[in-house]
Length: 175
Image (tube, rainbow, N blue to C red):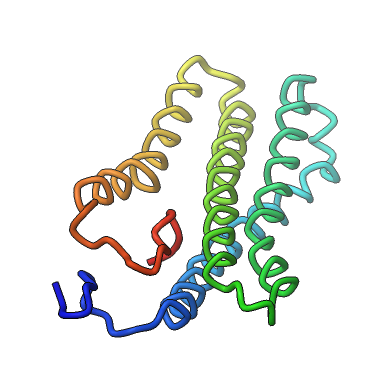
């Protein structure tokens, strides 16, 4: 631990920490936004394909759910930018970082659901709904959950207490 009580070894004010975390968060959002927007763009074209009409009612419903999930994921991942724009100049960046982080996490959860439902739709269509499709989709969803949430949460839990942030910016936001 340093002489000023900080355990993280950084010499930055709460405002500097918020600026750094905001920049880190924006980089993370750029990666997720690109993926969800490309996926959403492809999904939007499906309804205009002649083969769409041949989908079962269940698959057309699954498609609509997938589109809504994709649109919601995009909204949640773009929300931090809009949030920042609205609160800019109000000297509340530390709080904005916390909220932007929460919105990003929501966006990632919605992206996981979008990707899972997209995979289900494609595999049901490609295999004519063979019985193993739900198992494949569950396996992929499980992998996403493990890589995106379980491993980072386990590491965070294991490291809790070692690197407490005196700035109060330790509510799940980008580090």
